[in-house]
Each structure stands twice: as structure tokens, then as C-alpha cells.
Image 1 (tube, rainbow, N blue to C red):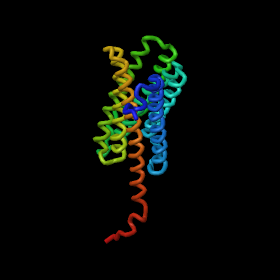
Image 2: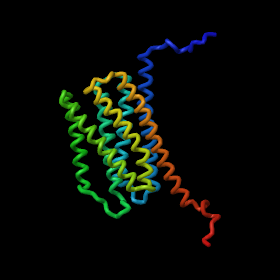
Image 3: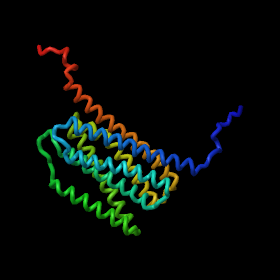
Image 4: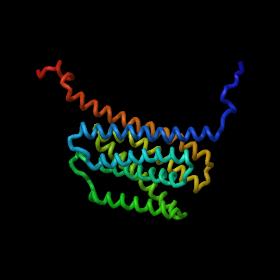
Amino acid sequence: MSATAPFVNGGDPAGTILVTRLLAHASIAVAAAILLVFLAIYVRRVLAEGFDYEWGYLAVAIGAAIVYGVAGIATDLTGYTWLAVFAEGAVLFFILFIALGLRAMYHADRPDGASGRLLPVWVDGLVVVGFVAAWWIGYVAADAWTRPVVAVGWIGASIWAIFYGVRTTRAHEGTTFSAITRHLLPATVCVVGIVVTDLASGVVGLDRSVVDAVWLVGTVLVAAFLFNTAVAIRQQEGEVERMFDRTTWRQQRLD
């Protein structure tokens, strides 16, 4: 019996890379879909206030992650360039709506009683409209000048998301907002790392294999953190259900 592993020097490298990319994109799509389902259940069953706009922002961001995963799978299987552009745009909108959601959570139900909001809520709508218009112009034009526009949007939204993620965790310590943000923020940081590496490759001339390696590891980590966020939301729902379950308190006495 040979000591050589049966798969060494065997198989097609291109096929291996394709399968790896498919699994990475699929992990994002599945994890984001699970998170979206758990978020919808939490908002519907637990929150008394209903589906406020901060949860709506997060839902759109998670939906963008699903679009990214599905578009990535379709791109890998078909090779169509326009699908790759949609996947790239999904990353932009994921970061943007994560940033809007974290910012909304930071201003909502502040423990000190002061929202500290400098701009009205409708300004967020203008930001979204501006991003949508810029992305569609870039998609239709597909010129060299559109890449810097997307890069500025990526960097700006990334800084915004990390800034408000840290502030939300500090301002809402011990609450659901803080629990969700602590798990969602690492996913955002991983996405930012992937984006920055991709942008840096065009500036400092990084080897493409390094960029692909960072993308693969970062994508798997993003999927893991999205799934962890879903678990955190489920745990928060379970804690609330336990509080109102009479079997939890039936052995207790008021005295």
C-alpha cells in the first residue's frame, strides 16, 4: 500500500477552485438566509414595537448578502460578467445597509434618553437613493471612472459601519442591540478586509493569488459570523420565551 495520499497530484486545479468558490458563495447565501428567517421571527414574535426601520435596514443588508451568494454562484457557473457586477454591487449595499442599521440601533432607545441624532431620518433615504443611482450609473456606463466611485462608496460605508458598530455596542451594553452587534460587527470587518485587499491589489499590485486567498478565508468567516448572529438572535428569543413561560416560575414563591 502506497504512503502517498490518493488525491495528491490528482484532479483538475481549475475544477478545485471552482468547487471552492461555489462552496464559499453557497455558505454566504445559506447563512444569510438563516439569519433573515431568525430575524423575521424575532421581530414578529418578540418585539412589541413591531418592524421598526432599524430592523428593516438590517433585513435589506442580509438580503444583499443572499443576492451576493446567489449571484456569485451564478457567475461561477456561467461566467457572465454582468452577474459579477451584481455581486460586487451586493457587497456595497450590504455594507451600506449594515451601516444604516447599526446607526439606527445606536440612536434608538438610548439609555440616557437622548438620541443625539444630528440629521433627520429622511436623510438616510437620500443616502440610499444616491447609492442606488451611483451604482446603476456605474453598471450601465461600465467605464474606467466608475471603479473609483464604487471604491469611495465601499470605503466610506465601511468606516461608517465600523464606527457605529462600536458605538452601538457601548451605548446598548446588555441589550439585544449590543448582542446582535457584537456578532454582526466581525462579519462587517471581514467584508471590509476583503474589499480593502481587492482595492489595494489595483494600487500596490498585489499578487492575485493573495487576493483570492483573502477572499476565500474572509468569505467563509463572514458566513460563520452571520450564522453566529442568527444563533445570537435565537438565544435572545429563547431568553424572552423563558421569562414568560410559567413553568420557569412555578416553583418560585413571592415571599
